[in-house]
Length: 211
Image (tube, rainbow, N blue to C red; front, side):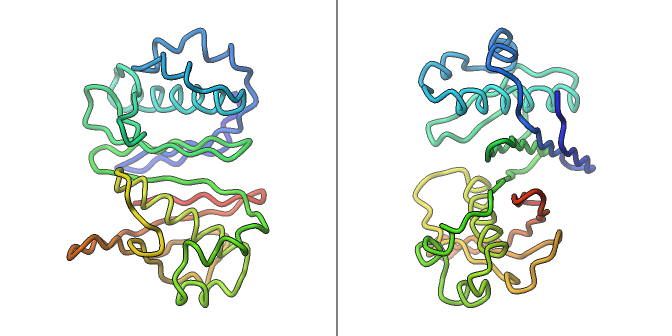
C-alpha cells in the first residue's frame, strides 16, 4: 500500500496516500472501518468510491493506532466525518491520485489537498477578496494554496452556509514557498477565530491543514 507522507505530531497524525488499490481491496472489510458502510451505495463514480473507502480505512487505522481501538468512521448531515464513540477529530480530502486524512486528539481540524489547475485563475474572483487577489497576483501556486486553505477552514468549522469570500480571510499569500504556514480568520457575525495552517507543495499538488 503506497504511503506517500505521514506527519506525526504530539496532537495529531496526518497521512497522505497515493491511491492505487482497486475497490475490492477495501470494500471486503468496509464494515470494520466504516460505521455507516451503506453510505457507499450512494456513490456511483468508481474513483469516488475508492476514495471514500480509502479515506475511511485510513481514518480507522490512524484512530486505532492512537487509541488502541476504533469503531469506525461516519459522516453527519453536513457530510463532516466523525470517529464513532471517540473524542478524536477527523478531516478528509482527496485529489486524484491522493487521499489525505488528518486526525487530531481533541480539537476540530481541517485538511485539503488540491491540484494546481489553470481554472483557478478564472474562479479566483468568486472565492477571494480583492486584497487576497492582489496578494496572489494570479500565481497558480498561491491560488491553489488559497483555495485549499479556505477549504480546510470550512472543514474545521464543520457546518454548511459558509461563504469563502465573506467568512474566511487569508494573509501572507504573496510569499508562498515550497512549505510553510499562513494565517486565516473565520468571521461569523461578531465572532472572529484565528486559525494557523501549514502547507506543503509536491507533484503539482498542495497540501494544507489546520494546526
